[in-house]
Length: 298
Image (cartoon, rainbow, N blue to C red; front, side):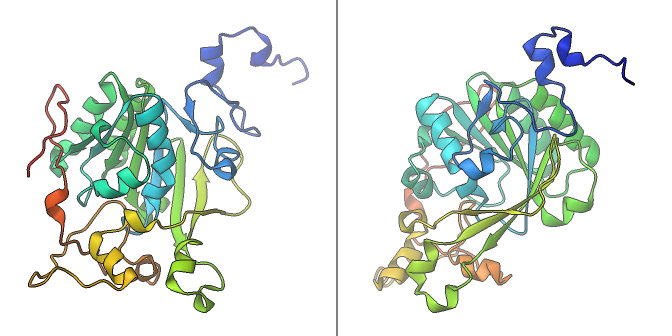
């Protein structure tokens, strides 16, 4: 094939070149890319960051293992610097706004779409079509391959980042998503010798990229993603600081889509959920066809 001519020597437009990739290379940087905020991760991501027009699949064992801390810096850049909104479609738990504020994310730019299972796909597609959207985060635990293909088509036609959260068991299934990664929480090797506050600052997320445009990683990547005390539910902060709860009040169990109340329990495959007795300070976000703003239900 010595006479073959490289397509990249034919003077194609930059837009067309971005849609092509060679199997032995990682895609070049693209102006539509948003940094993950983690240099080690950016170096192994096609385009050197999260790419608009691409569906990214995050496979997790359970919600709250660090997947939101992984995206926090990107959401902060989108909502504060770029002034764009982020849409959460059918998250399994209630978004914990205190955590987003602690991460510097503009919560007025966050929208929560409470869609039933049979409407979540449609809501995600409509969200990707809206102007001013920087990222769409979608939870579809039982999505079929053809639905993933629909999401990838919608992402290709959008200027927003698109993240699909699925159970880790879906890793063995085929998927149209160009970027797929397994995310697992990992404690530091010497966690047993640390106090809780110390290992909370050294919690890591192990990322195994099982599909990307380019060669696969030789081994999983480990990113330090410290747990911030203000980002945890109120009862967890009190217990860490040794403060009692409100007198006469019983803590109510509430699951959050941000972080586990006890990340060690998640790592140990525990079913323990976060507890929060101060849910009255939360804002709930509702969806309509025109993408309205946040609604305070206090």
